[in-house]
Amino acid sequence: MDVLSRLDAAFLQAEDADEHVSMAISSVGIFDGAPPTHDELCRSLAARLPLIPRYYQRLRRYPLDVAAPVWVNDPDFDIDFHVRRTAVAAPGGDAELDQLIGRLMAQRLDRNRPLWEMWVVEGMSGGRWALVSKIHHAMADGVGGTQLYHLLLSLTPDVNEADFATQGFVPPPPQGRRELAADALRRTAVTPVHLAGRIGHASRHPKQLLFRAAATAQGLAGLAHAIKPATASTLTGPIERQRRYTSATVSLDDVKRIRSHFPVTINDIAVAAVTAGFRALLLARREEPTGHSVRSLIPTNVRVAGTEGELANRVSCRVADLPVQIADPVSRLRSVHQHLTEAKNLHEAEAGEALVELTEYEPSLAVSAMLRLAFRLPQHNIVTVTTNVPGPPVPLYLLGRKLTRLLPFVPIADRVRVGVAMLSYCEELTFGITGDYGTTADINVLRDAISAEIAALLKAAES
Image (cartoon, rainbow, N blue to C red; front, side, top):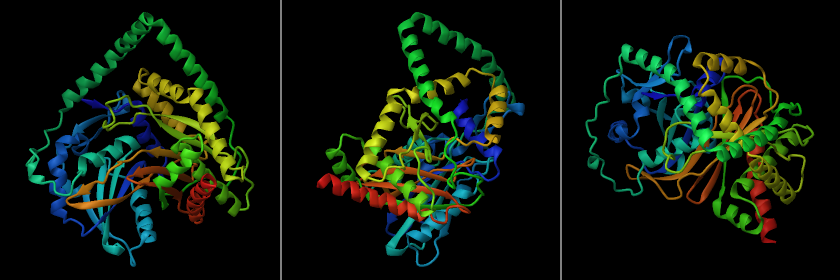
C-alpha cells in the first residue's frame, strides 16, 4: 500500500490548521487552436490512468493518526468529476486569465475524492485556450507535478490515442478495512526494525555516517539564522482565503547570455530578479528594504537519479535573506550568488532532509500532534517562498494542440502573503506570483520589476 511520507502529510496538516489555506499546486498550460471537447479530453486522460495511479486514488486516514495516511483506490472514481470547463471574462487576455487562476486555486480540493482537477479554459483571445492542472501538494512537489506533463502530453502532434493499450481501463477495487487495519499494525511494528537496520548500516559504514553527521550539523548551524525574526513589513501578516495571481515571462536565451558573462547560475539570475521585484514592492509601499526584510524559503530537489517521475515530495530547503537593500542590479546578482553558494556549502538542504527523515521513525500520532501545534503557532521568520523547477525543454502537444506557454502556481500559507514559482519551458522562463487577495493589490509592481531586472542584467552583460 502506498503510504504518505511525513513531508507529504505535512501539507495536509498545513491545510487542516488554517481555513484560509489551499495547499494545491498547479501548472497552467496555454495552447494554440480550438480546445478539445470534454469527451476527447476524458478519453485521453482515461487512457493514461494506469500510468498515474494517484489520479484514481484517494486518501484514507486512520483514527487518531495512529499511522500515516495511505492512498487507496477510489471505489466511486468518476473522471467526469475531475475534468471541468470554464471561461475567462472578455476580452480574454492575460489579466483575465490571471484572475481566473487566482479564483480556481483558492478553492480547496475535495478530500473525499482523488486530489486533482483539470480545468479547460475557453474564451481566450488570439485563438488560444488554457488548461489548469491542479493537484494537492500532498500528492507531489513541483518536480513531480511537472513530470505529469510528460505523461499527459506527447512529443508530437499526431499521437493516436487508440495506440494506448489501456483503453477501457477500470481502476482496481479499493482495499478493505481489515486489510488497511492490518497494514497499519504492520507498519507500526516494523518501524523499530527499520530504525535498527539504519543503525546497523551506519555501524558498518562509519566514514559515511561521520560525513553525513558533520554535514547535517553544519547545515543546522547554517539554518540557525532563520530563528531570528525577519524585519517586520507589510509582506507578512494574516491572510484571507482568496488569491491574486500574475506572471512574468522572459527569454531563457537572455538569461543564458547573462550567465555567460557572470560566474553565476540560471537559478541565481532568477532569484536575483525576484529580489529586485521585492525591493521595488517595498519601495512602492514606502518601506525601507533591509538585509533582513525578505527571508525566503527556497525548496531544493533531493531526488536521486531515476526517481524524477515519482509523484511524491522529495524536497528539502535552504533559507536565504534576499539582498533587497542593494540597488545596483549587478551587485545584487553577485550578492544572491554568494548567499545561495554559502547555503549550499553549509549543507542546509542536507540538514533539512535529515530532519525530515528523522520524523519517519517517530510514532505517527506524535508527529501529527507536533505538526498541528507548529502550524497553529504564528511564524515571523519566513517572508516568502521562491521555488525554481526546470520544465520540459522541448515542445509538447495535447490532442494535436501545441503547448505554447507554461505558468507555475505556488500556494501560500500562514503569514506569507507573496510566493513566487519559476518554471522553464522551451525557450522561456516564467515567474508565477501568488498573492493574498486583500493585501497585494500592487502585486504587478513585483511582476514588472522582475522583467526590468532581466533587461538590466542583459544590458550590463552586453556592455
